[in-house]
Each structure stands twice: as C-alpha cells, then as structure tokens.
Image (cartoon, rainbow, N blue to C red):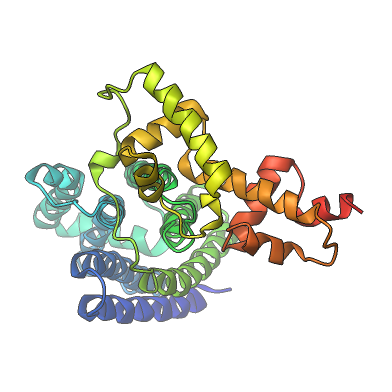
Length: 374
C-alpha cells in the first residue's frame, strides 16, 4: 500500500459518507432529530477523511493550522453519539441548556486553534507545514491527540451504559425483545470504538518511526470505516417502530416502593399459580402489563415481585417457563417433533433468543438436549 492508494480509498469513503449524511438530513421517515444527529456524525467523519486525504497527498494549507480545525471534531464525536443514543433510548429526551457543557472541550480546542491561526508567524507556519508533510510533529501534538481519543472513549462508555440500562428496562416489560433490543445501536457503538482505537494507533505510529505500521493502520482504518458505514446505516434506518423507547422514570427501581414483604410473598405465590394454571407464557407477545392486569397490580409492582421474589427480570422469568415447556414437549410421546416446532409451541418466536435462554437454563443447546433423550 502507498499513501496515494490511502488517499484514494479515504476520498471514496468520505464521498460515501457525504452522500449518507445528505440522505439522513433529508430522510422523511423516523425521527428528524435522530436522523440529523446521525447525519451530523457522518458529516464530521467525512470532513475528517477529506482532510486526511489532503494531508497524505501532500496538499497542506498555506496556514497548516487550518488542518487542526477539523481535528476538533474528535471532541464532538463522543457527545453527539451520546446524544443520539439517549435520543433513541429515551422517548422523553430533550436538549437542555446543561447539555451545552458537553461541548466545552470542543469550543476550547477550536478557540485555541483559531488563536494559533491568527498569531503564528509565517516562519513558524512554514516549519509546521514541513512537519505535516514529513509527519514529524512535536510531542505536544501527539499528547493532545491522545487526549481527544480518551475523551471519545469516555463518551462511548456512557453511550454503552445507556444501552445497558435500556436492555434492563425492556427485559422487565417484554417476554420477547427481538426487534426492540437496539442491537444495531450496540453495534454502532462497538464500531465507533473500533474506529477510534485504530485511528489512535494510526496517529501514534509515527512516534515509533516505522512507516509500515502507518500504512497498515491506514488500511485497517479505511476498511473498518467502509464496513461500518454500510452495515450501521442499514441497521439504523431499518429499525422497527413498534417500540418508541422508554421513559427515564422507568430506569428507577423500588426505593420508594411501599410494597410489604407479606404482600410481595402473596403476589409471588399468586403469580406462580397463574403461570402454571393459565400458561400465559405460551403467548409469544406477552408483556408485563398483560400479566400485571391479570394479577391485579401495576407493572411496577409486578416487576418488583419478579425481580426480588424470583431473582429474575420479566424476560428471563417468562422464558424459563417456555424452556421448561420445550423440555416437556421433547420428552413427550411424539419423538418426531423437531426442536423448532417445540420452540414455537412453547411461545418462543426467535430462534437465537430461544437457543441462548435454553442453554443458560439447562447448560445444553436444544439440539444437544433432544439427543440426550434418545
């Protein structure tokens, strides 16, 4: 690989990113705010890649400090992705004045760059331009670069924690979470982490003076970016609209609950009897509110009873009954019944979820369990 090839590939990826950003800004379906945040993310990425294309092609501005302006975007990637994650997860999310605090590092960095652009003398600019061309930048540049990546990683962690909170809530409300588990958003956060890691390695490789590490990191960065754009976009734009997110209130547990231990034990026994007698778990679309209505309690009380009484969330509680039903069906007289048929009869509607839950409960895959009965 040569830098010319790297410039060509980065230009092609940047062009695709620009196209995707424009599409998101004009996309009619879904949330305009969410699409715009994602589009802004891709637009910044495209500008960064175009600047990278210029640098590796030897096209440096007369004032090389201008190249640092788009580097400030690395202080924006994390906050924008964090805003996007919260906007997708929380239906009651709104931008407030305090959110501006997340932009302070970006504003400080940008102000510093503008200051350098205005005050640096011509001779120093010439020296910096030469260093840009030879990739021999002063140590403080690499220190700031490392800081920007660490800043992005912190926000990626916050975004990941938001998704984890979401997963806990939906597992207390739904017995089937396929289509609402936001796996595409989890993938996007992991992909951004991968891109950030590779970009950080690429920016630091000149310190070690090995040009082959630089070439390899460029190639990996562009390949990962290209894969990320094509896969994440498809996942994000095809997200199902059957569940519009959760309220922040739903993330709070039972600190203010006035449910007594006696009441909790009573509801626990009632719930176990209901599941055995009426077999609600056979309904693949069973929701916590359905079971709560049958029990005569609120969804929050039901969640507390299951969490504290059975040490499970609603999702695991219902699916444990389904797994037991699968075992009963497979142990029955009909030896020709397939695992998939038993899965659907027991109330599962997702093979991946079924396999995962069954192995977690029994220590065996459904196929292994069926073979053990022979």
